[in-house]
Image (cartoon, rainbow, N blue to C red; front, side, top):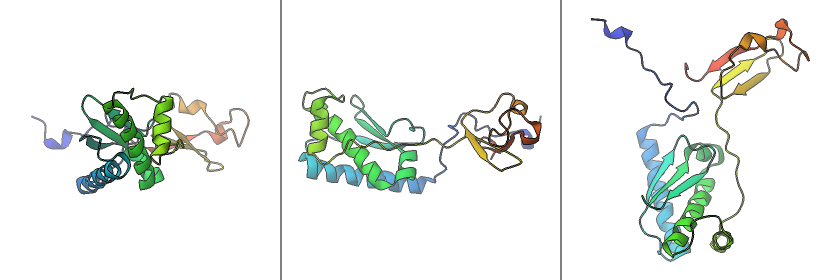
Length: 184
């Protein structure tokens, strides 16, 4: 039997932009999200929206938030919170709550004219914030120090050099892997 030192933890199944946050911090954020849900429901919807489960998602980068009408669940992007702060979370929550309100009142839960009119009437905005995923790999030029962030690993890194230092390929400016999120 092999000794335990040969067992490795593989984290390749985690999103490369996952944020490390302890459970207490996350529970505090979810509690705050619940308080905002209750406050917005009371102030902007007259308490007409039923109970919804609230959660944050590490993986939600392309979307700010989602609402699942069947499961009665609202999910908000954790990377969006980290990049844009709590005001963006409140705006997203109001947006998702507007979807829920319309659906519960017999309308479509999609982005229709009625939805946008309702959102704006309740103090929401149409402003969209850009949420950038954190790069899994960072390559650097040994000459100028320029860093190039990539979500995917270069398959043949020896064939890439810095375009700022030289227009064509030049081995003097060959990129090297500076940071690999999967390996720390």
